[in-house]
Image (cartoon, rainbow, N blue to C red):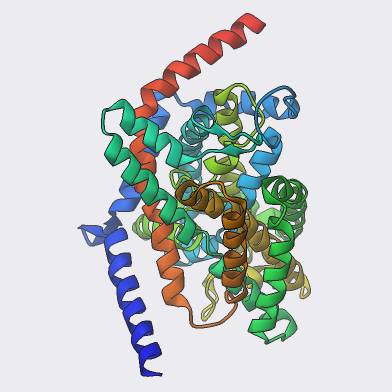
Length: 465
């Protein structure tokens, strides 16, 4: 008993120190700005400017590419749309529901403005990540694909004659993504919502059922995950957006004033704290910056897309932050602002969003419960693939070792609903944001290469016309 207690104390102490290092912050005029925030946002700004605002001028082309989805004759395991769906399923999650509520409760409606700005800038980061993920992927003997930041991190440092450092950073990224893939927070938030709506209070049974369903999907590998997410993502987004639009319609006359409140509040001292700290810190920690731009997770899914042109998948990848943050998170924010739920004392996170829906229709928390379960489930199965890719990078492509990872992953998921695991949440958050350190470094090093590839790609498009 004492040894267990000592282990728990040691783990909590380690997590506290790790969190302090990862989220180390500068204090400027009383406002704490973590270095990881500066690392992510400065990267997004540089990529946007260096590539000539590709997030804006490439948006229409990205939409047109989705129409030609199958790309027969190209290497890869899944279609470009399935890659986008898999990546989106990993980003659209509790952050779109709970993280937005936390941000607005801290910074007021003006926080929404900075959330949108961050999403737009993140589109450029995704473009660079996904382009490189396809360019430096490896096609295995069985036709499967191995790709992601660990591969282009190694390639980037090799180009600068630093192969040892490249190997170390690639291995470090793989370790971070394995630990970061644990689905604790999504299982736990799903259980909390089920308990509050239905009264069901058996955390272990909930976790066991959740793990069984996850195992049923991931046992088939990436193609199975992609088949599920390509159907689940449109369904879950449709349910949630329809519910949100119904709430907005009941407050239609107040929408213009809510939009003005967002713009006006974005430049107040309150929004200065809430916008940058509430969204770009609380949102980061609770939902991995919502769209995970710069983290390096979703490029693992995009690497498996059937395409001959790495840049074309980069264009499809830049749609992720737009859908995840600019559309879904903004609609969530409008629901919360229109109903005034963020001003209700005693509510936090998902409770604020649930209260916003319940203020219009008493049965809406049931809809939110379904949406939250779908969001969380899709995130867990996508991150299982990210973690498995990191695992394979470390231990090789052996099928038995791959199955071992899947079993261990499901065991971890089964424990996710157990309460009082905040130290575990903080540890996973730290692992996820550590992924951004080697990832963005590699993006900087290979950025001139991406711009050259983009220029060549545009030239081909012009010739095709």
